[in-house]
Length: 275
Image 1 (cartoon, helix red, strand yellow):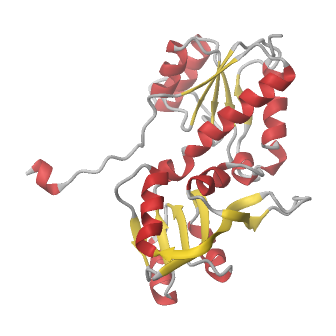
Image 2 (cartoon, helix red, strand yellow):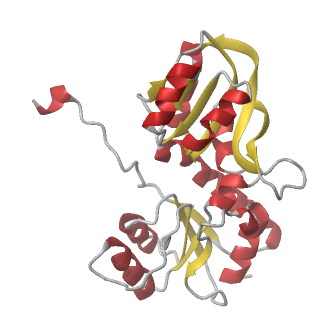
């Protein structure tokens, strides 16, 4: 059967309950008609014009992003701004737009679980448990372990592979051995002290504040900033897989597609390449 947008929302609510979202967040159907049928879902991390154009080019009618396209209340829709242009294009092509943000951050088997799986961690538990959690599996960030300690250099090779990156920023004291790892996909500077008190050898997240990095120096704790995009992007594939599985169980006749063109917002420029 052809599902309606409301069916997709209900499916997402099973995967990442919307009531797990932070109070300041904006999740769910942000543009569109819940009663309209949908035949093709397109998933990406950021609600950019380029992502929307890719979705339109693939013939998708529903775009699901991690970050919301409307975050702060709008008093005016200025079509000359990036947000206004995004809204205009989505409406012109009748694209439903859904955000699955901090609810997917806190969900069991959510954003941080996708990163933890790539790091090959076991015995996972939330770093910052959700107050509403009934089984202790929901919450922000994760802490996990390896069966035996490994040298820091070996751990970093796993990190680079997981992030598909050749460079990261590191603050604090690099441990000789790593066994317990705390992490938070996306912006997680505020959970650094939780990671430290939890007994982690290292903490991997992104958008680490300067003051937090200085604290790590004095605390003798190691913090790795892997960038916002790289620490969250693995979750897009996880969400796509979950939707495909749910679609099969529900008997939906719907495509689930993932962006092939989305890339990090930042690029590295090396001095030797511009001189």
